[in-house]
Image: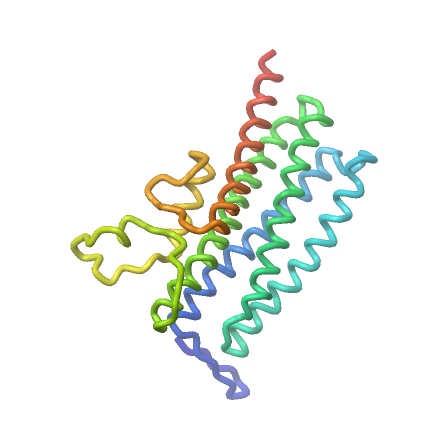
Length: 234
């Protein structure tokens, strides 16, 4: 796929770059949802609480850094036609995870601080946080798994991170199968919904640590929603 500018500058996105771009778009969507949750915190009045103000200020600082690194990644991928460095990508994912954890703390703060009349806004906040959790961790799973699969393709020593059903058994029509965006999204969605993997094996300790964090965040969101529902009924 090729784009041309009036100045005559051209750049090409190869299939691998387009695949990488899909995960970067997931991080951009997370940034948009993060802005929405910040707006909801101000809407329900949680931002006026003295306990929450420092946390919101810190969240704003994290958002600025995160936005900067995402822009650098986009420039590297689209303009320079290079894969963004792994340390940069790791830092971007870490900032996204930190921002997500701050949002979860804010959701808990909503439960404690806001009246029941504003509960629907809190439910929307929790929904945004749930979607954000899926997006952030699908990128983590891809990053951990993709680099080892690439090492395998290049003939280097590698350590398998995730074992999908197509990896362990030869199914008809899946002889040269490779996991894509939908596969990692499916894994992340199942982990947040069922609090663990379903048909995918997690082999390495970093991947297990990432899954523990995702399950913990999902459990907190579920408990928050259950607590609010019980409070409204009673």
